[in-house]
Every structure is written in structure tokens, then in C-alpha cells.
Image 1 (cartoon, one colour):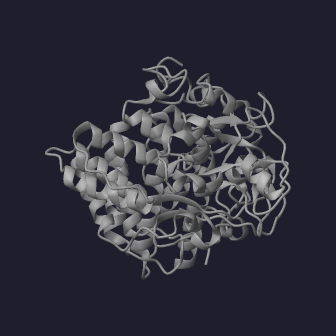
Image 2: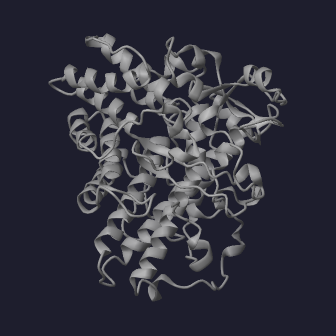
Length: 489
């Protein structure tokens, strides 16, 4: 079954007073909290589990990270209704974003809120003994690592706080921690999680040892530690995961939490949401944002026409690649075949991200565009194979045999011929298949940056600037201007 993340809202509310997790006025100062203090909590396994569900909750807010990972890249245009629709997306698309960008501030706030919730648990990790406590701690450490990984890949050096929540006022004494030290903590958390979690969990959506090793391998890959990445990813390849035969099924409801899913963010349409608190939605907000504008027809539901694939993205697929029609919806062709109608939005390309647009059949809980139940496949086994192919190629000494083997496993599933390439031609093919396999899933911008290809692929990309996003200006101000901005912003 799906893991219901809304338990936090119904059963326990934390006092999250960290300045990075608050997006309201100063009216909260000097107000007596009615919330239960963490000092009086964590007295039973049930309370730890409730707090853990609260830490899982912020995973649902990563829909925004996924969208920006595509919009900032050469895969898609921002789209929407007009050039002023979600101006933050428009700026990121054109590489004109600045420290006032609201969407970047949301990522900063929401990811640090996730860090804080994990740290609340870890601050009291030794308070109460119970069977399974180590697994709770391991999940909390994975979640902290996950949120910090998102922060470091977006912003580079960020404040690193371990085993206690960030309290209001701490910002004056906490510096931005170098990215290398943040990665050290990410690695330590993930190694602990991998060693203390099972390969399978009874409840779908819970973190496993495979998820921890996969994220660990990814973190190593982002630091160009290719031998270490290969070792971690090989552990995932050893099982229990496998590529599903029916590629299209991966992104349909029946494909959720399947044998190819290494880690999946759980969404539900059972609780409604509104624009006043997008991070509060239990549904996948990106699905509605990506959807077909004013759509009326079969199979799909309507949306806001953001994140539109480019013709170049469509053309990047090889002839015969079955992944193209799964990843890309040609709306004009679909309408001519079915009689469906729609409205062309801003920057209309004729294409939509078919993996993550709304399907018919959900509860349509209001706002229906914000409460789609489509899970996000955060780490897929195909992604692991392609990361392992790259790591084995780049490690010293390289293992081109393994690199080809893992690449070809992905290609054969796509009904493409296996390759017998070597040298740079092999690496280029790994990059090409990585784009075709993962298009629409939020990885493209960061893949281009970490491999040094962003400037040649993304219009407006400035070397020495756009590898990172700017620290939100208000966060620097709240820190007493003690933090330096990222270069050239």
C-alpha cells in the first residue's frame, strides 16, 4: 500500500522554528507555542514512528527540485500561461535567476525543514529503547542525507547542523560549511543507513539498504570519486532489483513501487491541497503543473502546461527507441487520433512530459491539479546501471567491460542494439542513453553540470556562475550578512 505521509498533520505537530523553515512574517516572535515540546516527546516507539513520518513528509516537496532539474536544462522550456506565469521558472529557464527567486527560496526552506525534522529524531535517538530503534535512526539518517544532498547540489556550501534542529538565532553563529564536509556527513549517514536497513521493507515507500547504497553511489559520483561510486552501486546491482520488461508500465499506477524502483517518493490524492501551501500537498504538484492546458479528452487530465519538452529533446532519441513515446506526449498527434481538445500555453512546443502528467482515474480531490497521486521514481534501477556504467568507465583503472555491460542492459530493454564502443565514444553513449532513459525525471541539469557539459548545452549558462544557484538573499540577511553569496550573483 502507499505510505500515508499525512500522519504528521493529523497526529503530531513539531515546533519547527528554524529560520530556514519559516516563510511567514515576524509575527511568530514572542508567541507562546501550543505545540507539544520535543523534550516531552519520544517516549515510545509510536512517537518515534510518527516523527519519522514527519521527516518523510518533506520528500513530497521535492516535486519542485525535479521540475527545476528539467527547466534549467536543455530538455524543456518553462511554459505556463504567459511569460509572467511563475516568474521564477521563467528566470531559471533563461538563466537570469537571481537571489530573489521565490522557487529557489522554497527549495532552501523546504529542504532545511526536512533536515530539521530528521535532526529532531536524531537529537533524541538515545532517549527511549525499543525493538527496531536502529532502523528508525537509519531511516532518519538517510532522510537527512537526502535533503542535504539536494541542498548541496543546488547551493554548494550550506550550513551543516547534526543531531539537533536549527533554532532561530543559530544563523548568526553557523557558517556555510564547505561542500566537501557536507558530503562527508552525507556519506556517513548513508553508510550507516545501508548497514542497518533491510533489502526489503514491509511497507512500500520505506527506505531500504539498496536505496542508501544507490544514493551513496550517486553522492560519490557527484564528487568524481568514481571507484567508491562503483563499489556502492555494485551492491545495488547485486539485487534484489531488476529492469521491468514493459517500460511504459513504470510510470503508470500499476508500476509504482515495482521491482525497478530503488527509492520512490509516495504521493496520494486522499487529502486536498491549495496554492497557499504547496509544500503541504500530499499529491504530486509537478504532475498538475506539467499537465496539458485546458485538456478535454481520454487518458489524461488537465494541467498548467509548464516544463515543455523541446524538439531537440525529442530528436535526441534514436530511431526505434521505445522510450520516446513513453517519455514524450505529442499532443497534436494525440489530439488528431482521439479528438481531444486543449489550449496552447506559453512557449508551446507540441510536447508534454508524459511520464509525469495527470492520468484519469484518481479521486480529483481539490485542488485536483495539486493532489495527483503519481509517485516520483526518485532512484530507478536503470539510473543505477547508468551511473555504474559511468563510474566503471571513469574509475582508475577503468573497467570498460562493465561499463558496456550495464549500458547495454538499459539499451536492450529500450529495444536498441547493444554497443561495442570503447574510449570516449563509449562515454558519450552512456551520456546519450542517460538523457533518453531519464528525460523528464529531474536529473538532466545536474548531470550536465557535474560532467562539465552545461555551458555547451544550455543557452545563457555562464561558467563560474550557473554551476550553483544563488543563496536566497533573505537567508543571507537573516544571517546578519555573515554568509557570502555564491560567485557572480
